[in-house]
Image (tube, rainbow, N blue to C red; front, top):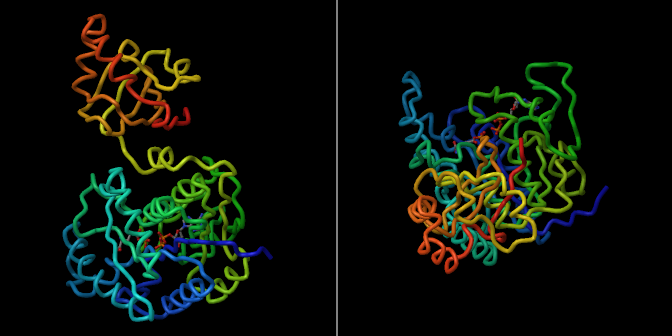
Length: 368
Ligand SMILES: Nc1ncnc2c1ncn2[C@@H]1O[C@H](COP(=O)(O)OP(=O)(O)O)[C@@H](O)[C@H]1O
Ligand SMILES: N[C@@H](CCC(=O)OP(=O)(O)O)C(=O)O
């Protein structure tokens, strides 16, 4: 048995635990999770809750004979969210706060910092943050799409020590246990590679989103930030006692020994690129030991429109994704420099602005 040394944790609760009968919220499983939250807080552990279930909670308010269009699901989410938050809030004798986020919020560095500040202030004042995706307003471009990945982004933003994903299954199996009787539970995953993803199947419940694939993606995001990630069965009461005893009741994904620096992690796992620059073969050498990298003469092409401070992808001519980085130039200026690389004006401008990207604002991507 290990000593529990969590300072701050993120709990992610799946839809099947909120609305198991798909007929509004039920306290059946949530009550035990609420007690777990109370017990963690009593031990001085700060808790952030990421709760799914708004669509599942709101679906009973709409006709069941209509096809579930995107618009109808947004309406279900808007209506179900109030019911779900009201239910959580009823269980606690401390205040809670609702934060509804989209990927559009998290991938914008300023809004990301603003979310962090709000979460830290809530925690400082003993308020329980309850987070969900803002399903009622998201579009394909703006959404994270599943709360497993959202909870990992939140855990990274909040500098959590552990991410606990409560689901309807005991943990990660070598294949979907709901479809294969001989599936074997994997208690500990040291590193995530393609063989781990190959085990993951889709959700088989009527209310889940993403199944195991999005949980492994979440574990990858969180562990690379140094956050231990658990997939655990929220249906089973003994789970919670075992967790508090420092035991692993499901699957634990071990954190990286050398986690990524926060800004690099954000760029790799949360930000998405607004445009890209294609560089010639000298990129690899230019990274080494430099304080800033890529000059105009190394750029072969510029794609998309981006402003100074936006995240861009650096790619090689053969299509390899080399790095994500913060642009020190707008796409407009880079196009000008690329077209006029020999001109004195272009040279002077680069001397005064400096390199296209700086070493402190770059996240090298694994070559695949
Ligand atoms: N290798 C696997 N191990 C465990 N569960 C798996 C696996 N592959 C697919 N699944 C499915 O993933 C489901 C959990 O994901 P999901 O339904 O999205 O839950 P939640 O609503 O908690 O996010 C399980 O009920 C199971 O059907
Ligand atoms: N944001 C959605 C949940 C999306 C989601 O990831 O659901 P789940 O797989 O049950 O965690 C909702 O509140 O209905």
